[in-house]
Image (cartoon, rainbow, N blue to C red):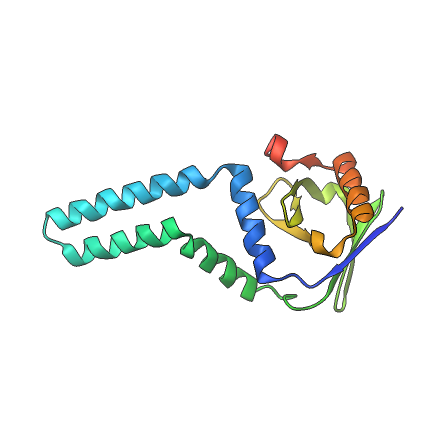
Length: 165
């Protein structure tokens, strides 16, 4: 059985992937600690008369709180992806995954992937226990294909959300 997925990844899908990854790692608490530390530092600078520096640090804490910095990082990384805006095709089988994009036609063994994570909008495949991943937008799959792909992924890979590889 082969499952073929063809898509052009969007920036919004990369935002969703970043949010799903952070949620799986429970990184929201880290952002909170960074914000609190920056606010304390900002107040300390204001107390000693360094209002400008304290204000700049407070603005950075606000930007982190609102998620602007995370989105800026994702957008910057997306703009540096060589295949952004080009149709990608993934063909999943029991033996391997075939990746096609432009002139690239690559056979990837399942052992190159460590885990998968499912979010509301997409499936993420993590390489070799790292934080690098490939995305598969759910919008490109019908219900039957999505169910088949879920089954294949659960047989071949660990669930990142459960095991946090």
